[in-house]
Length: 166
Image 1: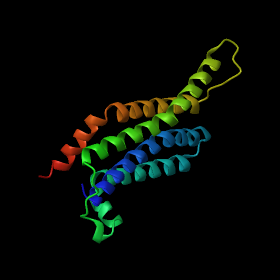
Image 2 (image 1 turned 90 degrees about the horizontal axis):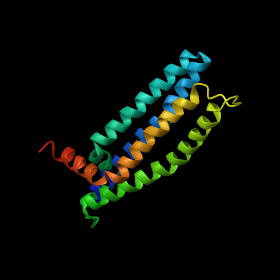
Image 3 (image 1 turned 180 degrees about the horizontal axis):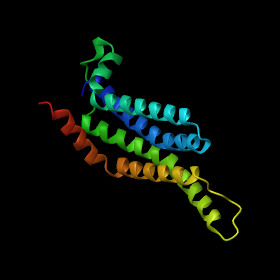
């Protein structure tokens, strides 16, 4: 595996991170603006979310182009010594662990808030934002589990995407 390919793997991992970031923060910000009746704020959140998703898609689709602009030309074709599948599997696993490490505490917090609000005479009101954030956290948990336990399958998906043009 060349240095450019190693950096391309990192670029794809960053694309996944960006996707998770949008899933985590976007819906809550949109709902907060909706709750306040701020249509300009809602539009701004949607525009930023779409822009970030477009950047993530471009990073996912063209990782070698990005990598070749990041790595000096003299080092592009040098070998990093790691098999591409091992590097990708480790990257997906580490990214999945990071997603789970941030999603599990959020899941516990929102589950506890739901429990407190569902009791008779509860003083806790969930409003609109908490259920929406809970849905986002559940999506993060699914993505994190998929990254951790589906790393081998994801490596195959990346291999097919890489070989699609040949």
